[in-house]
Amino acid sequence: MEYPGKFERVCSLDEIYDGEAKVFEINRYEVLILNKNGELKAYYARCAHALGLLDETSFDGENRIVCPVHLWEYDAFTGESINPMGSTLFPLDLKVEGNDIFVKIPSVPVSEFKVKWFSMYKRGGVIGEFGFNS
Ligand code: FES
Image (cartoon, rainbow, N blue to C red):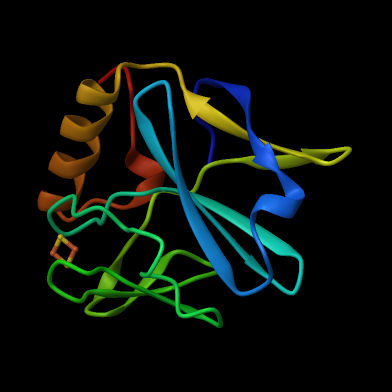
């Protein structure tokens, strides 16, 4: 998924153990990073349903993320919703350099990001339709 942004250092590799997730705030964006067997994923830490915060307990350590607000479930490694189906978390690009984890933080203000992303889902859109300039 292409989006405008800039990589920012979030944490070191040894801050997120295997089977664990953590939430960080970078430039006012909440970022959920999870680790399973050394595989790392990053998402904007807000649920596609009603922007509930996906906290550190939302990752089951295996394959699922469950939103603590109304219990929507997502595949932890694709971000696609399982129950109900048809939605997705917003994946953020992640890279590792040395012992540090970097995540590409969108370059638009988070208030604008939230409104556009949330309204897209209310229209039944898909993630490829996400546009910062529309
Ligand atoms: S806000 Fe996440 S399930 Fe409703």
